[in-house]
Length: 239
Image 1 (cartoon, helix red, strand yellow):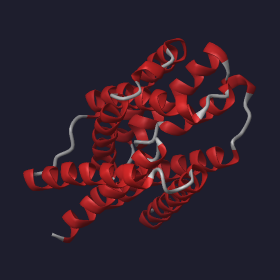
Image 2 (tube, rainbow, N blue to C red):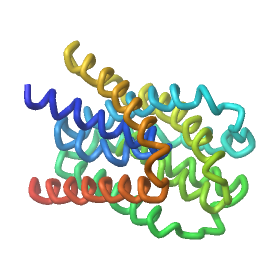
Image 3 (cartoon, rainbow, N blue to C red):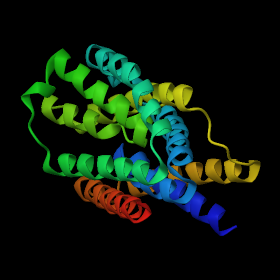
């Protein structure tokens, strides 16, 4: 019972920040889901939930999607998803926790710094970001940071970043679910997850006009950083 309540709370928090900032479900939820459900189940649940949230979020902004950038991004991501799936099936749990926590921690630090990377521009940059993002999404449930870095280096305004991030999330998470499978939750757990996603969406939409975007994004990244470091610590303890 306590585990189910924790599961709903994690999904609620992740869904809220996703609707609040346009990103963040996986960054916030994956480390906690991995600690609660285990590396494999935590990642596939994050893929399912993040994909569903992105589908709902894309409905109102699909006209702002940039096909020239998104086609190479998503195509490259689809090619590297199987490699991430393979990795998760080869490593024992402590090492998976180390890999996932390390990827989340490094990704958050890069986004916080907002690195200018000339290589992440144009079609080649889209392919590079997509390839890294697809691998990270299927291996650790966190494929957004490479996309965020690409968008920063491309100079996209927030108005365009959000719908393109949602589009990317729909396709990459769909491919990841096809590769990783569906999480083994019972009916009660699925009902709690769906209810938490819906409630989190309402909370995020309500808070969005009241909280400055830069503060909300910083909070999301700090929460994600805490979760990533915790996963690394648990992995080290398990060794």
